[in-house]
Amino acid sequence: MDSSLDVDRRSFLIGGAGAAAAVAVASPGGTALAQDAAPKVKAALPKYADWKDASALIVHSDKTLEMKREEFGNSLITPESKLYIRNNINPPDASVIANRDSWKVEFGGVKYPKSLTVAELKTLGVVTIATVLQCSGNGRKYFQDQVVSTNQKITGTPWTVGAAGCVVWTGVPLKSVVEALGGIADGAKFITGTGGETLPDGLDPLSLIVERSVPLDTLDNVILAWDVNGSPISLAHGGPLRMIVPGYSGVNNVKYIRALVFTPKQTEAKIQKTNYRMHPLDRKATSDDPAVWAMNVRSWITTPLTSAKSGALQITGLAFGGINALAKVEVSTDGGTTWKDASLSGPNLGRFAWRQFTFPAKLAAGAYKVVCRATDSEGKVQPKDTEINGGGYLHNGWQGPGIDLSVT
Amino acid sequence: MLSSHISISAAGCFVFAVSLSALAMSATADDAQLALGRKVFTELSEPKCAVCHTLADAASSGEVGPNLDTLKPDVDRVMAAITQGIGAMPANEVLSEEQIKAVARYVSSIAGKAN
Image (cartoon, rainbow over the protein chains, first blue to last red):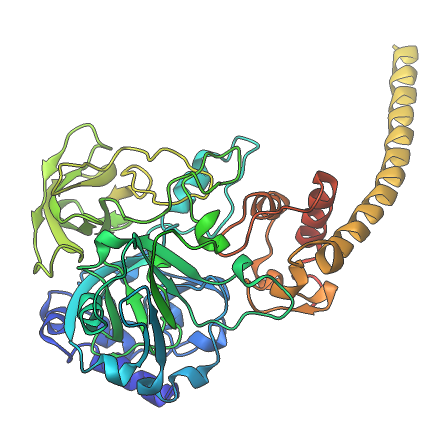
């Protein structure tokens, strides 16, 4: 399944599957297909992701691959071959995608607890949604740059903007599964998903297991997905089945989901209880700190990134509202002193997708600080800087990803 | 003028001698700290660093977390990862400050060097 032949086929099919994905091909500057055909340098990629387009990625570690900012271009949909990777622990053996339809998920906290295979889930409902998939730590480098002069340190991958993509998932709505299993048991307040990674022997599973709880009010949006961008989800991105919680940051979208239980409390797994929490810089997190769940409003410029010729030019970028829909985007060419509205220039794939924006400018030769800021449907505006937190999570300040543009 | 030159030069010698001896002392302390760091990595930590991380010098080949020989974290990054946790890696609950400093010094000085 994971041979390079299949992978190349997968990359090629990205443009042809589904109405939403077709938009990527039709959009101006939709260069995904052309770039996928370019020769690939595979040396630096970890084995489970060696089919990816190495030239499009920054390899921070074998568990963390970031898409280069210039690769966003003017595409709406992010090809799987360029999509970032953040694996909290190493993926399971590739044998788990050898027979995708036979993968089993154990459902609990429902009236009739039961294991269902992917094949059985496919009989319960099918829906396709576009979501921004974004690592909780995307933009951490901007926090790290802010604390560089102190003796505090924020650990974790120094992502800028490339730990994010907009992808199209196909799967079964969780509420359809719940209906088939007789409804949710009394007292449930959370949806708790367990990943299928293999844990090493000799340690407490709770110290390492990827098990996340999200509030029950996400139920109407959650799907269990088997396809991304019209093709089966790769092992690297959570195939054969991934829990997608639209509007929630990457870690909540549990890969290789093997159990899904409606629970009265959040899981005791460390990755939920004391990790991925919004805690101050000077101490570790506790379970009382807010969990890293919903994403916030955010935007960044995609072209131009360094230089431009004087005269008329188009400044383009991507913006999304996180848990809410996007309302508007503003651009400033003077570092945030004055702002003007940008126009939303691409199709609207729904509340949880990002949108392309365009801002026509006329610039004389000189140096410019070009920044953008988005507003969501609830009126929340990106701040200049996000308040620092110890884990470097959920950055959404507009200053950090600003562009120093040289116009000649 | 002459005497002042001499005294400066003497002072210079003195400083030089002091720093040599400080170097010798710190080299010994360094060795001890690195040895402790290696022991923390392979034995004293819980869960053991070596269970999850590859580090050639420690002969560990854990694949759960990032390969430290390729990540090459600096001292502060290792310290922050241990004290606060990161991603799926839990925050430390068993190591002393001295042990944390030692393992951070050890990992940051040796990662990527043994290949």
